[in-house]
Length: 273
Image 1 (cartoon, rainbow, N blue to C red):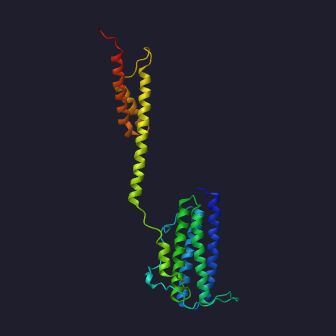
Image 2 (cartoon, rainbow, N blue to C red):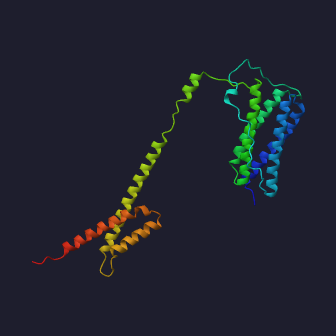
Image 3 (spheres, rainbow, N blue to C red):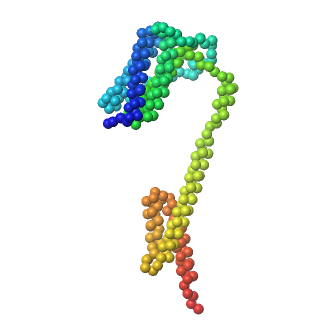
């Protein structure tokens, strides 16, 4: 099965990004000092290799990976454990040299995962092939989770501090948005639909009534349909059109028309004195 031109270019970009990421992570693994950082790099590097191989194998043989729906989830962290606020953050500036310390490695990993998550999701939206699309979505989730794992470690070490604003200011700013009145919105929509359907039924009934009245005034060479034939015709027409709920309105209009026709016939007959 062929790939679309757009998704071919997008997947090529993702594969190129994964190769560069694995090359960088391999370099970071040789320079990390902390055992925790080294273990994190190894886990992320292994998952990147698996994701890369799945995508390459699918583009070669169109074989859907058995683990395409498995996600990488970070252990849930209570929000109370996140350290908010600034506490004398260290100055940051570019550092030359071939060696990286752990903080530089973690910052590079975080940037890599953040950008990769955005790129995976943006390119998934351009894929027509459902398996390619799912693999890229899974890649976005995996990078999102791994970025959060790096953030949690840096936040715990005081290397990634989260600035805050006054609690009153944050609440005032966000509390301008209120919960939606779902019940009210739904009832209003249903009422509008009912009114539209009623108007449609009335218009259709009028159209049928006028049409049948014209048929009843045809010349003597054509026999006008009986009331039963008219009702059956109206039912068949509306059932074919997918609007069986309007049949009763049409029937009512036809019956009214028959009564009027009968009254007209009686009045037109000569009176015997």
